[in-house]
Image (tube, rainbow, N blue to C red; front, side):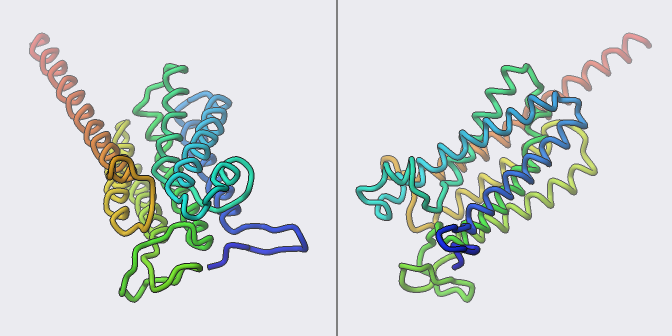
Length: 259
């Protein structure tokens, strides 16, 4: 692991911090570029991204600390508010970010399907980059494995699943799929539905190989978020299909009237 990218005296640059910054910048740029093409207000889009990023950091950090109290002990509140320590709970950060997007979307009366399609490309790439930083920081602890790609996490014995790398890989895969789909499908909602289904499945599956995390009533919160994402993606597909059927019925009715 390489948690420190470089250091000059007391000045330390952390790998995770660089990855987080880079991921946020690239995600913001991709969201802004797509939103600009769809004639969203550019200034409001930037405000939306910054607000959503803030919520994602707060919820992701809080959930990470609560799910890894063994790492923080009595210093949990201090670590949450002040002291640097690598780690964000990806599922909680995703929920916080989406809440920010929804708040802006509703307040601006934007078309949510188009808005979600603007977001998911940048979001998937941002997830991939941040998770790469998380891997080098050693902040995602996988369960013990005998697989050849198992890694040693500082402070833990035996080979572990590289959970952060799994998430980074799926982030890059989803981003690639969305880019390819975007060239063929122009209907709003398609990209969002694919993103939510795939990221939801990843959250459900990868949580089985994660050593610790936030648990409520013996249920892994990350997996609940994953189930919610999958259902939301399916709901989007259902609404798209229903809307297409309604539009086709209207067209058929108009054709019949003209005849």
